[in-house]
Figure 1 (cartoon, rainbow, N blue to C red):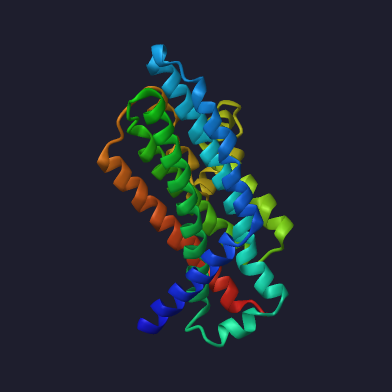
Figure 2: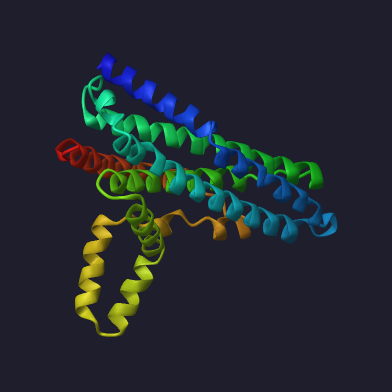
Length: 258
């Protein structure tokens, strides 16, 4: 167990340092500068509406930048190791290929966490310095977005363990889009009388993640406090789904002829 934890920690740390050295990650951070300049559009005499509007726009930016990190950096964790044949050296020192998957996953999640903490903290401080008010929904919404994108990381790594970069990106984006509107697609199929499509969507709902559970716009725009029990259930659902996808990815990588 100690050997396994040590390997996971070493791979995660190496993946994190590798991501920090990437110029793309620096570019993502620099994109936050024009976002910070937009803080001066807040009208202090109309504090409520303007603050909610800027908070919603800021969380959208955080979600978009996090999505870029997930798609581009998760691909650089497994596929390059296989293409460059460095994965052979790694596997000679790994207790299992699941350990390699988990280590790579935690490396990307740590990078994603740093990005979210920086951008969410910047958004909170901007609103505080400009208006003198704390907007407590921002950290909670940032946590929910972080959970959603961590789940997407596990899906990307699952696909990267068995497909090429182009296919991985295409299917990941498709799953991300379908996951946000799975209930809507099912309702439209039932209203249109397409029972077969509705049945297939029901099956897809058992396999694909439901990203609509991570919606934060209503909470932010209407200042609806998030319940602790709902957050715990959402975190449990996320961890369970992550474990499921990483387990499948590790099994595929284990039986794959490299």
